[in-house]
Amino acid sequence: MQYFVQAFACRNPYPDKYDMLMDIATEELGHLEIVGATIQMLLSGINGELKDAADRADFARMFGSKGNREEFIHEATLNPQFGVLTGGGPRLTDSNGVPWQGSYVNANGDLTVDLRSDIAAESRAKIVYEYLMQFTEDPYVLETLNFLMTREVAHFQQFEAALDTIRPNFPPGVLQSDPRYSNLYYNMSEGEDSRGPWNEGKSVGFNETWQYVDDPKRQVDRTNGLLDTEPTGTDRTLASVEKADKQLGKKRSAEIDSATPLEDIQWSRYAEMAEEIG
Image (tube, rainbow, N blue to C red; front, side):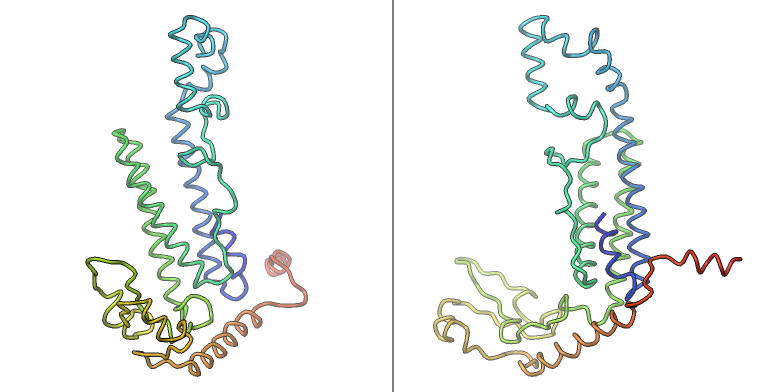
């Protein structure tokens, strides 16, 4: 659903990305069918037992003895929704029973943001399948999970490649960020301090030199709450960033405006295609 929603905003300005997002979204719906079918096969027979309530269902056992009643209460406490709400079929919830909701969809109308969300989503999906494979020895379930996991890896690479075709794509969005603060690393912990490419050497995105602030409080006091901070370890200035912001903003706006008609707007070309065929 996330890929579907993201695709609509880029249909006109970036039809190649629209095509990719719609293709992957459609494939993901097929994965939903695979997961649902697998769950249904694993739960085969449950629905029939629930229908045969008078003779075989657990509800009848409730009244047999104190032990049976306690056993039923125990089962219902552990998984109260299984028989009551699903009838033995799959349900759109997470492992804690929380229903799927629209807030799970991340769509910001900017591909440099949305594609990064998609890469993260595929990463999480991949590791979930990897974990699930540790909970079964059924060869067919393992084969299914392995296929689904592998397709997440494929999508990860496809989204990454699509993001790489957008230049520039860092930082996400349009505004290039303030050079006074973009390469500062604050040592906010006490004890052993770790150093690495995240706080020393050159930054990956802007190729700026990381400024390691060992005493953040002292720096805040010395710079009037950071207001008097000057860009350090970078070629970027406030003026150059302002200029870059305006240039990129105009470029992105022109790309969208030039590809988005304001008159005779239609979503499909069925009529034109029919005339061409006829």
